[in-house]
Image (cartoon, rainbow, N blue to C red):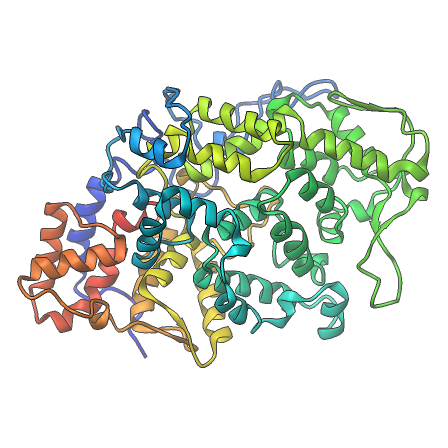
Length: 569
């Protein structure tokens, strides 16, 4: 059995890691033109300020709540500078005319390198070459049109999890009732897709929306509906209209069951979905919604349930039942309706959802989240405002918002200001090393999924409705870091049977004829797409020079992946 401890030559490895980390941590996750975040060393955010007793007419913000979950993690962060870096005619124009001013160990000389780091599940030399060949504008345009990209290889791998493509009736016909096979299969297929897709930006956006409208997978009553939820609602609308996604999502049996709306009745109203719709999915706490708004929101969603039948083909179908719908005048923020006819309750609810989707507070909420994903943990307000305006101007269509984002100076100035989360680190390592399907790919991916579980970042597995956090402070603990380091060794040592692993000695087919320094430079360029700073490179040379290179390269490769050069997104 391969040694999984990753502790061989530990003293030398720690010296190299600590040397690189000391330089890297000064820049990792720092907001643009701002001071570095002050971290917490656990997964839980700081506690919110003490709350007064909240009344029905009082908003959550007035009661002391954070405007959003990211703000809770960054509660001790100093105020960021909000310099407007401008909107340019094209993304390439923005890249050429924007200077990177925040210190970072990453190479700031090539904006294409920054682009592929931010818009893929993990950049490789081949992806970088493709982006350079197409040019910044051409590459972005193609990635925003995923159907134009042949992804048949990833499709074929996906097909090895047939449950991942089934509708609820198909799942129910394939497995025992309430078993979790389909949910596990979907998470594993998702990981495989992230590793082997060529539709890079689309997959990033699928992950973004899966967290925004999070349904824990696996969990409870969604055993048969999870594949359809992700395929129809998330993947079906990832680069489309948020309004369409929201309306589809609030009719989907998976969401109705996950947040208990299927149990809501006019005589016993369940507030779960009505509350999360406001707080997480649309306007957010900063909009000032009150407990009365939450109650009315829940009223508007009554009647949306799941068909209760013994017919296996229909028992997970959406059903609107007017007998369950609460009637009476409602007001949520600026939405008002007499809501007098239960038979019209579904249409009233859809009108309410469209109102929320197009609300300026929703625009700001989604704009901020996109800026957090693509730019910085504490993004500049001018950028957020610009994205929110594009969202409203284009009637909640997402591609125009991304177009504005890539044409904004703030995006190109943000080199080195995001860190990879554990799952992203795993996927990026597998991609850059060239992990390939093997004799039993499903078993190999299942093993990798269990590794992500140990890291605390299993695909689609966040237990709360708010989705995985996307800020560095949420992941600053020793556990995910050590598991990531060990995972890098697992990829080199082939811990999980079923997939084909790279031969570390063969990663550079034509080893540079010359010094060990040249070899280390080439290996760093292959794995992190850039050379290390001289002091860090020299430490690796010393590490590799203590024995014959063929005996040390299997330790040198994961050591490079352990560095901040790789962990920065």
